[in-house]
Image 1 (cartoon, rainbow, N blue to C red):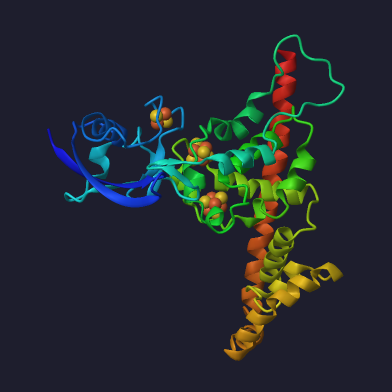
Image 2 (cartoon, rainbow, N blue to C red; image 1 turned 135 degrees about the horizontal axis):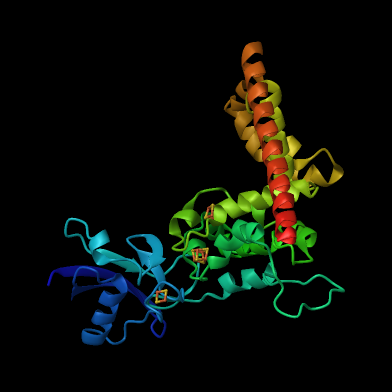
Length: 344
Ligand code: SF4
Ligand code: SF4
Ligand code: FES
């Protein structure tokens, strides 16, 4: 049987000592990182700690960092990651406090679901149905991918915003919130979108794609967050930095054919009294830009010429028209479908 070296990050909470330890494990093709960790624990060092349960990528408990990226140890085959005889490096998930070896404290991750109230809040004054509350297939297809989350935390572990702001709701809780925002059986769509548009919510995501890459279940959290932004703006929840920034960005490009960096921060903060502290906060950065002449260069840039601006506007208008057409098509399709179902 082939042999593989593993370098495992360990932490002893009693002595508070962190260290790396190397082990060698035999494996057969088809065996996973979790199989090797179990073999190490059962035959070499019984004190090595890590979580696992199902061994079938469904309980979500074996997420850890393998060669620097968060993934399920039970879904990761050794043969897929061996690289020129280098050791496989195993470490606990990121963005969470290590309890022991590869076990982390997932309280923050779970709290985010509670903060986002990711459970169905039923419509008031409705008689309970004789069987289950039903939804239609088209609606189900829209959010079912977000309902496949197994709460493994791999996305949260690799999220670059959680690393900087532990209060950020994080990709998994936001994707789960998406599932309820687009569920017509839920009564709190608007309130949810208002909450999600606040600080630490949808507008704080930097679209780094890490959650999409880490997710073993194709939940596509970042895409869900982007759709939540669009839906929040459609619901008129625009009195926040994120949607002002989005409108200023879009409006500037449509008007001048380029991004207007000089006015973007002011328009994003908003022309209002409450924006003064935020604008004052920009002062040191603006002074630095002035000193390096970058602000003057940004202000001097005129953007596209007349023909270029016309082309940019044409693209904008075509995209908007296409978006409107697909919304109308979707509505017409849904209406046609439900009358066909009723006739049936
Ligand atoms: S795309 Fe957004 S939510 Fe996903 S990992 Fe990056 S910052 Fe976090
Ligand atoms: S969204 Fe994906 S990576 Fe994140 S917790 Fe759910 S299943 Fe895991
Ligand atoms: S052991 Fe259950 S997901 Fe890996």
